[in-house]
Length: 172
Image (tube, rainbow, N blue to C red; front, side, top):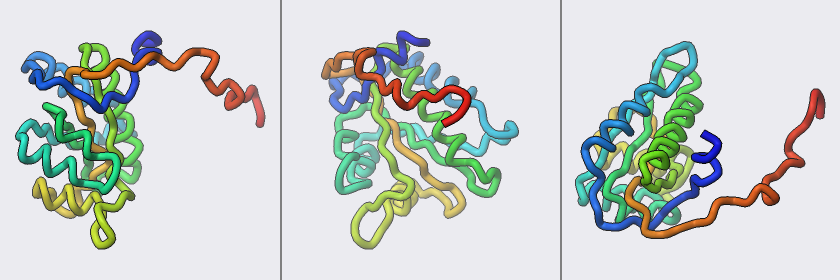
C-alpha cells in the first residue's frame, strides 16, 4: 500500500489504448467494496466509455475537466442523498479506492471535483452532469474519475516534501 501511495500522481494525459475488461471488472469490484458509514452504501457509479458522453463530461466545468476528453474511461461517483447524510464522505472514500486500484493496475487517473463547482455562470457542474447522464434529482454527483493508460510520467513526491509539520501528537 505504501508503494501505491508513494507513486500515485494525478495523471491527465492518456494513450489511446482502451482499458481491458478484466481491469474494468477489478475497478468496479474495488468501488463496490468501498466502506461506507453504517454500511449504507449510498454510492452509485456510472462507468462511461462512450466517446460522446466522455466529451460531454469534459465540458462539465470551465477549468479542470477538459483532460477527460482523452480518457478511455470515466467513472462518475455519485450517491443517493436520501440514504445517508454522509454520502459525500462515502463517495470520497470510494473515489480514492478507485484511484488506488487504477494505480495498482498500472493505470493513471485524476479526480474531477463536481460537487460545489460551477459549469458556467448559471448552472452548477453537478446539474450539468445530472442532465447529461439523466440522473434523478436525489442522485448527487461528487466527482468524476478519469482513467486510462498514462501518457505522462510524474515523479513521486519526495519524502522531504511531505508536510510533517501537519502532524501533531496528543494535542494541537
